[in-house]
Image (cartoon, rainbow, N blue to C red; front, top):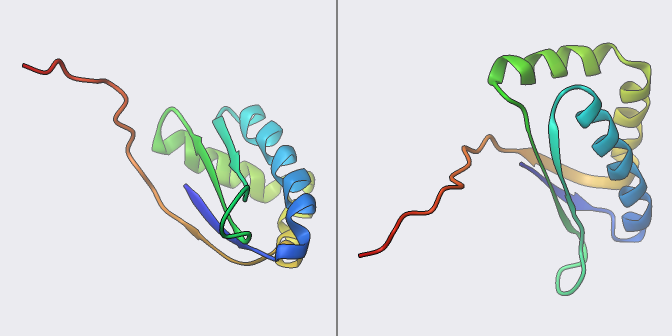
Length: 100
């Protein structure tokens, strides 16, 4: 999961940025679950969620995106769109359990 603190006046530009990454991550074998942008309340917080089949697949994506010109151009745009971001690695739990 990526947590972003956006520049409040650049939310629309960040949405365009995010839509490009959705296509790229999916093209590199990931499953991008989307960007979650401000709607109500705090207007400077956004999240992105994506997953890869394995940590090895994610590492291959990181290497490939570091060498990809389109990805590098997008990485260069990021400081103009955000104040900061944090990356957190999560493990999904998606199966429910029967209750007694």
